[in-house]
Image (tube, rainbow, N blue to C red; front, side, top):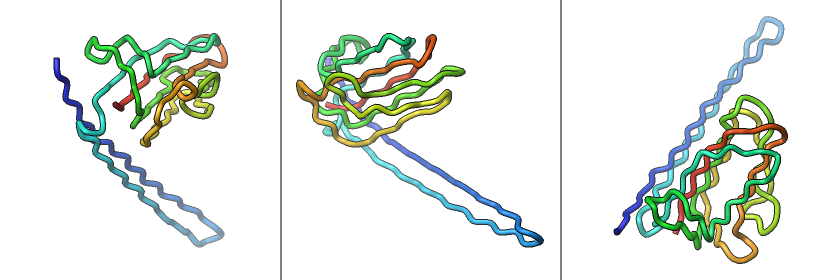
Length: 147
């Protein structure tokens, strides 16, 4: 079965800051809009999964994922996009780090997420996405795009 994958990634931030000093009011705003399109020449593999993460690290070896991805193995040579979302109500989720890390460790609080659009070439020493909860169980959504 041939699979064609395309992705349109959009990020829009709009921030307004207002400050009142004495009788004067100051206001400023900033807007950031970023967009990237990934065609089938950029990405040919998709991995999505909702994972219940505990204090025992969950390790996803992106060079040998066997779930999701249209019932095909997803052996990423390059990760082009990574999204990890902490959908739990509390706790801290550590994303990355560990042995042969795909990314450096970062912490997410409840409701937080990481979006990373780049090219990470995998190898024997760059392949594991490690997810660890600070306590209890944290529900997490993971999305990977690449080839």
